[in-house]
Structure formats: structure tokens, C-alpha cells
Length: 187
Image (cartoon, rainbow, N blue to C red; front, side, top):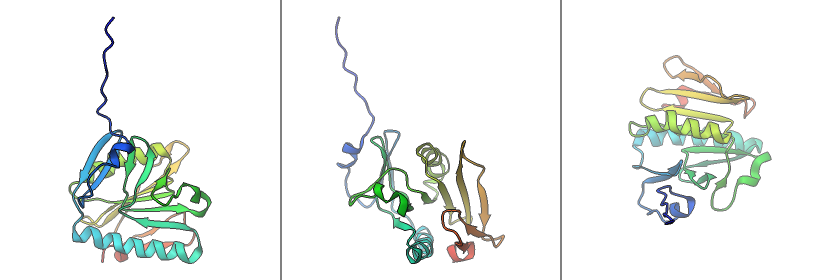
């Protein structure tokens, strides 16, 4: 009997460490290598506004750690992502290392662009749900909307959809008392 070698095209964290530092976002999802170009100005403005608002609230109350991309989140050996923004509660600080986050953050925020819409709304939503991220926010700078997915016993419940046009305010059970008007995110 001839033994046949099986070659896997799945990428792992070890492969990820060899990817070039080229200004693009490199991620591995289910073993597939995903590359995204650097974000545009509108994306970065929204990211900054969210980082300041959430970061200040969390820091003032000693709730945990807020980090903005690029920063590696290792969910498994075949799932390494760089969310636009993440929060890890003080109670779960053990997943934070000097180099990366090893496990699911409590909150992940992805700011979508024309090149990442499907990946953020479908692929990453399923990934974050599978690994137990408590809340996942999909923020759309073009439509000026936010979809909030919250974990239930059966995974993510139906998304709460908010819009700047409706003068909606974003809240979260992760930060008691936190309120952020969408007008402040998309200004």
C-alpha cells in the first residue's frame, strides 16, 4: 500500500507570523488568508470617534482594556483577526498578552467598507458568534448605521439596527450607563 501525503492549504498562526508588514490588514479566518487594503479617511474618523468615546468611558470606570487596530486577536490556530476596535473586561484580563489577545474579547467592533461588507456582516459575525464574543457591532460609515449583535444562550440574537438619521443612541449592557449618539460617531 502506497502512503499518500495530504497537503493542507490551511494557514495557521505560525504562517501568519511570516506575512509581510505591508500596511495592509492580514487575517486568517477558518484557515484562509484574507488581505484588506488600508482603510479610507471616513473609516478612520469613525474609528477615532468610537475609540475616544468607548476608551474614555472604560478607562474612567476601570472596566477593562480598549484597543484599536492593528492588534492581533487569536481565536484559534486557524483564526487570527484584527478587529477595528475591541474591549476586554477586567474580569477577563487573563486573555491579554504583550503581543496579542488569546481568546474572544467581550466586544468587537468592525467598521465596514465596500471591500469588507460581506466579510464583516457574514463571515466575521459567524466567527465571533462561534468563539463567544458577547457583543459584535458592525458600523457602516457610508449608511451611517450600526448593527448590534448580542449573545444569547443560542448565539447572537436579532441585530439591533441604529441609524444617525433616526437620531438613535447606542447603548450596551457591557458598560452600564454608556450612551453614544450616532451623530457623535458619524460627525
